[in-house]
Length: 242
Image (cartoon, rainbow, N blue to C red):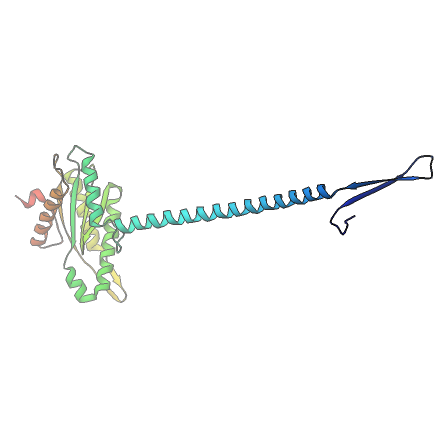
């Protein structure tokens, strides 16, 4: 019985054997009822707290994952060329320095590559076509170099590759493969179709050099010689100096 005063009374009755009487047992359950309600409320609060904690944990996990993804994307943008996806000049040079710091052998070769008559491509077919040509070249060079090294876009239509554990003949072969693949490829931009060639200079990093820049400069000089000799060719630095 729930009384108007708020008390809760339990009423039980049973007959007395061999008597025409009944016994009534009255118990005040108010305190027990309050305890049950408190326990139920506490249990509900615990469940709600657990649910809120789980929801917060999930939100924190998602926020952490999003933050890590954003940080990874920022690192990628800071280290790569937006048009080609290759390393940018700064990251390429940094990786070159790390590479020479880990070796004591002359087994590192640098290839400098430049698309021939690139201004003519832009002037004839438009800058959008020039961008497509740059992307096509990057795809060709990256596929040929593969795991043998890494490639960066040095700016404009100029690119560089560092080959690891490579001798001169192999470096020249890589350069020739890139040159031939570019000459045989056709670039398509909307209704325009055209071909382009590349000039390439090759040079070795020399043991004891503290910077990769000297080897890059030698490759650049060989590239200039390739341009001077008529373009669409590979020139090694040692041959350019003879």
